[in-house]
Length: 109
Image 1 (cartoon, one colour):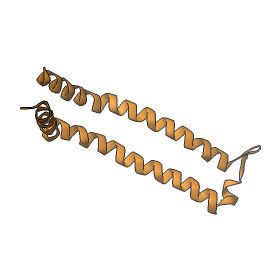
Image 2 (cartoon, rainbow, N blue to C red; image 1 turned 90 degrees about the vertical axis):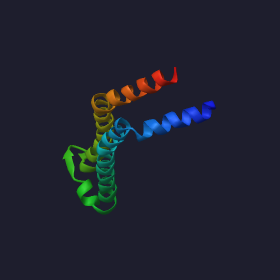
Image 3 (tube, rainbow, N blue to C red; image 1 turned 60 degrees about the vertical axis):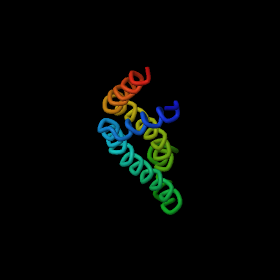
Image 4 (cartoon, rainbow, N blue to C red; image 1 turned 90 degrees about the horizontal axis):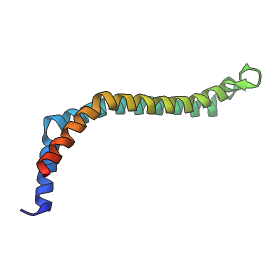
C-alpha cells in the first residue's frame, strides 16, 4: 500500500464518519443563515443608499445622518459576526475537530 492510497483511505473514512458529518452540520447550521442575514443586511444598505436617499439623508445628531450610522453599523456587524463565529467554533466545532484530528494523528503513527 502506498502512502497516497493510505492517506486517501484515512481521509475517506474520516469524511464518512458520523463525527465529521456532525461537524459539517454544525458548521453549516450556523454559517449559512448568518451569511444570508449579513448579505440581506448589506443589500438593504445598498438599496437604501440608491433608492431612499431622502431617508438616508435624515440628520440624526448634528451632521450625522441615517446613512452614516447604517454605514458604520456595517463595520460593527462584520466584527460582531467574526466574534460570534469564533465563540461558536470554540464551543461547538473545535471539540469535534480536535477529536477527529487526534484520531487521524494516532492512526498515522
